[in-house]
Length: 79
Image (tube, rainbow, N blue to C red):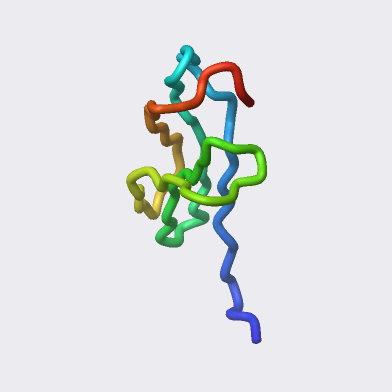
């Protein structure tokens, strides 16, 4: 069923900044459309996203805006 008037929140990633050999800052934007929205990043040190992955702190909001998280411990010379 569909709740009348409900608009799905949207979340998207934007370009990473502050990229170093083992560090970066992950960035994103969200539009909650008036609903409580939870945002977080998950990342891994391999392109298959298998094995251990890390979840950044959760941000909850019922507004819209940007969010970012600095990360470290990345493997040098990888994508």
